[in-house]
Length: 394
Image (cartoon, rainbow, N blue to C red; front, side, top):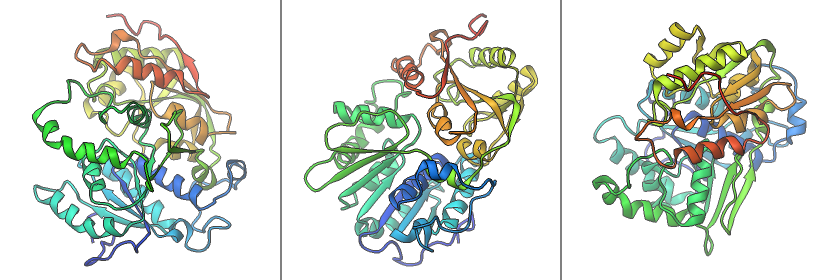
């Protein structure tokens, strides 16, 4: 039994031949695997789901038409490649509980738990990878996942949303570029990148449809796939069927971002922008991103006066359970695409604030501004805030 309380498979136990094996490294990825499984199993439509009974806990029973085994009826096993970050691990544990409630087998791997952990994890997964008929992944940029993709014979590959990174993945797949995260600085030709390049190239070929190999992207993002790639819309039907509708407060909530932590936005400029948004919109709560630093959050509370909320689940589920503000304001991020879907029919307004080029760090990736503008500009159901008063002054 692992540290999160999950039962570990014994010996060579794993999915049966032809079954589905999913790899996730974040709570959002696991949420979107559940959404994909719900849609793949024929769960109720978004319209039917939106009319479900209110409640703040997922129903333990399977959706009508899915059978007693729920989403696990098709032999889905989710492998959690656990990261180090305590906040991420905590949210993953909660999401794993929800997955088990749906009848899904969850295999927790402390994949980064020491020098020998990667080899042990990969060795234990070699058999299941060989037997699986379909592979589902949440992060095609992950070196761990890319390495695992070289070991599978599965002809069906599914990529579920890992936030806005899905937009970059599809764009790079269509243009034939190497798979590189949008906020990465430099040329990508360092020693480690060069050593790993053959594995990354092989993984990229596995993610390109051809012959009997089928590739599906399950996404709530506006993506234009290359020829041969199937796109299935993620409407957050599972979330809407299982949670809410929420009680709305009279206030405005701000959604935090990890743009400072990823080296894209200057921390002082970011705090100025948060303060200006709070003043302008009367916000009182700040929903922290799981990667935000404790020091930065302390300053948001002490200097700006916002109540810090650290969600124990992805924000789509937290907002759907409620209580949530009648307006949610965010910087360019995944939630400006997903929250309008998850909160459809509730009356909540989602607004997105542009990132001024002056906020960017001098060493930020040259692709950063264009990518962030694209995230904002393609948010179909979010109100666009083009400027923040006094946010760019020193």
